[in-house]
Length: 427
Ligand code: KE4
Image (cartoon, rainbow, N blue to C red):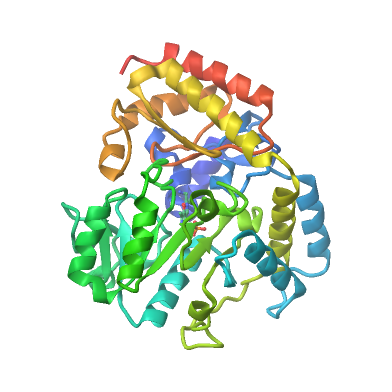
């Protein structure tokens, strides 16, 4: 008997590559068909077959308040009734930009766009336009969306020319992308010693969350700040995940390191398609129509999306203790995994982000992350899914906890984790 999800997946594969609109959703890494989601509320998602799950993907980050938060839904319904899009400036855009500036003071000026990819692509163009330099430094294992110049992976060693890791990206699109090792300042120094005068910017996830969650080592972010200053390059924090998640001021407030540019996504849109890039006013003033760095967008600053973002940031700002509460809940899950699986896993956790790596060693960079046993992760994922716990369908993603996850949700999750260990083969 096929489930409705299976039927829909077969039909979808006729019209969309892999039956999905973003690769990770296809569940390839966990060797099963994806579940198709019908609706979501609070900490729960419900698939088209009526199965209910406690959701720890939270749409890959936007859902820090849980799904369908009443205040956000009502505000969005009201905005929809006034029209979905005007292609003209609106009051909301100013209101949201001012809120972001209040919450993240390093963002003196910003531009709203429609996706994190667009935000990063545009931030890099602004950095190149402002500095007049071409090269950028990224880190192996960090993901910044799918713009051509960032779809690269390092060759061997710390210092490398990049080669595209996606078909369709011409090599000369990646020749200006230099790749360093996360948490390895020496690999960055080496690049600057060789290319310093031509490096426009260093872009980093201040907490890496796209090779699984990898925390910055003590001094790493500060080191990037110092070397960027030394060579008059710009430091870009890609806070698409960490922005408004690690704290109301993002990772830059959490770690006390001030980037020149920041990219935001996910939470800023409250679940609607919206992202932003911004930073020092003098840099952002190179962006059209003020300056000569061109960037545009039909739905940029869309009135419905900005309404969702404004309501979400309002709730994040006004709910006292929200961040510490979701961090405490996250720690409970992380500690349970450690106690249950012992030295067969490495659990990295910060704020309401965590990852369970099925490896005995510490995970501090790409090299150590890829040592993980992805088949063991797939076993874990499938057991948890079968018991109503919806995790990221890949070892190299993050687990997201929301303010809607109740104590009972956390308790149940911890119980199922303990059962999973007993049920899983001793890999
Ligand atoms: P989008 O274009 O997907 O809105 O954002 C790209 C992006 C940029 N920067 C960071 C740090 C990101 O994590 C992302 C996107 N994150 C993935 C999750 N690992 C989105 C999920 C997906 O690709 O379906």
